[in-house]
Image 1: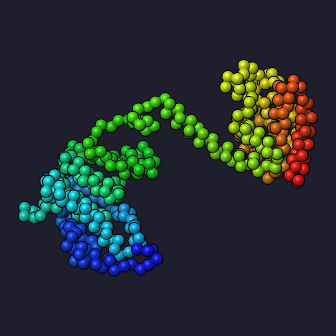
Image 2 (image 1 turned 90 degrees about the horizontal axis):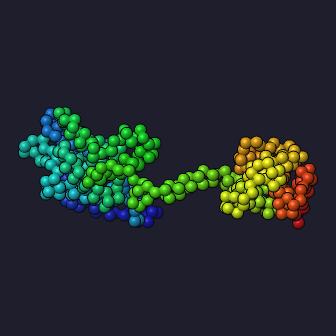
Image 3 (image 1 turned 30 degrees about the vertical axis):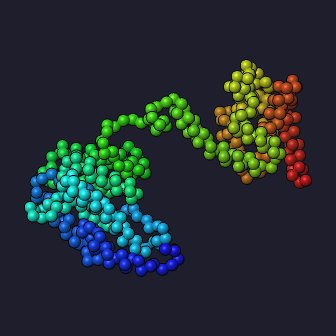
Length: 390
């Protein structure tokens, strides 16, 4: 049905034939049946079970859950939606009856000798299931539910489900039955609420295998160093992605030449060909800073800790503080992106000029004057402004 059209009269036609095709255990949305009928039967069964000294078990969903979504043209709230849901739920009733009446695998409950056996009662999407308190019958119930869930794509809300026993049920029997279910209290203690709810919503295996540790990064479930390395590497990249992404946006907004932007971004990624980075690749055997020869040339040393760099920053007109124990990315996060756009521009150009002085010493063998480098920063900033005006 088109979502803008009025509901069709199909619901009224289906309503008339439902009593003849829907099992009597379903008491909702069927003409001539009332929900109070099943309520009375359920209360009578509960009253009888409190007095009877036989092993029984009940699985109950306490609260309705959104498990049915009308599709294929039916608009939300269409009268036929409820009837279609009842028809789909009748499949579960048929599966339970097949095992209870035909197969004898589920015995249900019987309040008197001549009373009918009751294996299940439905209240729309709330269900009460009756069985003997035995692992065999519980596994059969779970098998039936699993079959129905796979066919209908519905989900049992295990958090809202509950098992009830008669008064004199032995503790070992209760424990044996509960072993077929999640220990919800323990799961809630070990995980946060969202993860715990996802875990207990997974149906347990009917085969009831022994618990085992599985490494989900490998298909065979066995741990490998390779998969652990890729996992840790991915986590490290994810942790560092936030600051770098913010810096990338800030750098690309600064008014300066594209080659300077590219240089600053490579500095943030720590991929400049410093002596320390070249040593990692096996391309260099000399690691000392070419400007001072006092310490290995890393990005932090070259741009902040080197005596030459310190003199450049001292002569710099913005009175920028040179950090002692901080990495390049953290320092740039602190200094860039402020209200003074001019300051961001000068800081980036100053880094670029220090790198230029370093390359001049490495490739040309010429030394630069720190105070002249600081003056070159101001000249380069002026050139950038002139270039933008053209």
